[in-house]
Image (cartoon, rainbow, N blue to C red; front, side, top):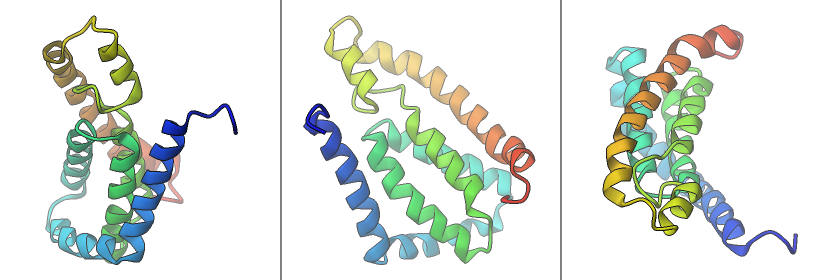
Length: 154
């Protein structure tokens, strides 16, 4: 425990606390209810929207905080619509872990940027392509492959 950097503990602790606060305060249920309006859209469109929003927001803040915010909200939305939550949660987990646009998205991005060998402009230019590819791949996984891999859960 003494060798774990305090920054890592703070990030993880903050993410867990944020997720717990969203759930216990009722905010996750409230936002889930508001997002239930998406139920008129086809399942693939909802998945693409959720994955895209998670990736965009995940590029501007910590991936732990992004997952901590979106997981309880989307789980609540899925429960209200009687949808299986795990495909959505798998998509959120994957998409919040892949941030390519800005240094603050993930610790590896910050480390690369800190070395001074890459500019934010370059990160954005290359990150847009990677983000689009990631949205497509995660959406395909969530819509088609996840139900095949775990049909009893989906």
